Length: 117
Image 1: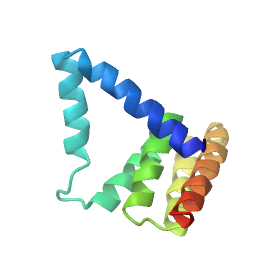
Image 2: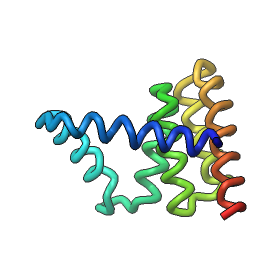
Image 3: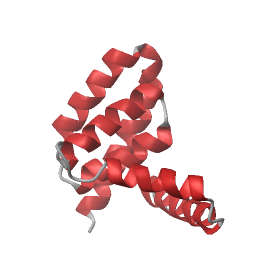
């Protein structure tokens, strides 16, 4: 199983379990996240690149993977991803470099899976 499929399967499984609990606060938080990344004054591509850069600076590997997947879905190019990653590393400092490595590995996996579809 690829790292992309493994991540997506785990995320879907755990989100389902979380939402099954019918906790109002968690459901509203999930809904807020969904609505924040919907088309608005900023287009979806811009929002996903912002989400990717913020996730890198916050050093959240799950968030980075999620936003890389969305960037791939909406047609962000490799050059655009690397530009966002470079800004994130500039802002976040050298402590972000390990996350950069994992991000590049995940992006490559997304690209490979796209070629095999």
